Amino acid sequence: MGSMDSKLRELIQKRIDFLEEHQHTLVIDADTHLTDIDHIPDALREKYQRADNYYQGRPLSLGDILTEMKWAKVDMSLIWQNPATTSYTEDKKANYTNLLQANEDIYKAGLQHPFKFIPSGWVDPKALELEDSKTLARICVREFGFPFVKMNPAQNAYPIDSPEVFEMVRTITDLGAIPAFHFGADTPYTPLEGLLKVADTIPGKPVLGVHMGGGGAGYMEAEETYTKTREAGLLNPYLKFVHSAKRDTHMESDFIAYTLAGAPFSNNIMCASDAPYGRMSWNYAGFRAMFDTLQDAAHPDKRLRAYPGLITDRHVQNYLGGNMALLAKEAYRSILKTNA
Image 1 (cartoon, helix red, strand yellow):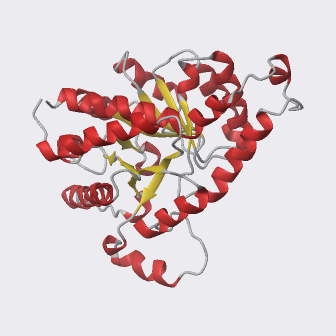
Image 2 (image 1 turned 135 degrees about the vertical axis):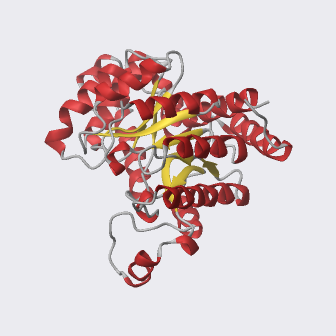
């Protein structure tokens, strides 16, 4: 399967050791998008420099995200590229070059701050030629050491259960990494049934569903996806979910249901902000307040009243960071073993 540079292996091992030592204290934002401001496309540069108001996907620089982490009391962030600042054209070779650069920017940020970030990759089997997308996945894992490689079928309008996606999933898992997906009810391209088909192609191996059915969907339109996803995740221990860009009341219900189910399911969901699409300081203040109320004996949910003390401090810490630390450790160990 090929091998890794010895310095990269050493860096990955140091990250494993760090996560091992601090797993039960770290707060980790499991979904953030970082942009090297020097590489913003010219068409977006003026908008970025002049806009006083927020706009969808407004870039976060390295300094921006580190400051936001400090405000939010977040110790580490999983970072990947921001699709709003990576230009696609009809030229698939140019798209490959642009997406490679975006991934390389993430890699370099991880080198600068090896214990603040879990740098992760991004591929696109539609915007790129399939073989180029596979090549990019290999670079992401073997040259950059990324433990997760993500696809966003909603962004570029391709079905999550298409043959090209299945090929990419096998490529990513063969490299030892974990395939990740934008998984939301915001477009018809990422239904739960499609995610389940992806999981069926790699039985016994984890798949990471970012947003757990959320994304940009309307509240009523997403309700069925939220409920079915919660139920499906409690049947398959290899389905892992990141809570970001999702309605808070459904996230609360997920935390209760997964805690009731116990391990390994209670290890399978984790908190995130989707920065810059969500504000990290806002989201983590909300998560902490949510967990405070979930641990309150007067909480109105009947399930909690039936199981007093159900959600412990350890559960809370796992949801805030421990679960991602555990999953990242497993992925890092897998890519070291696979690419020995």
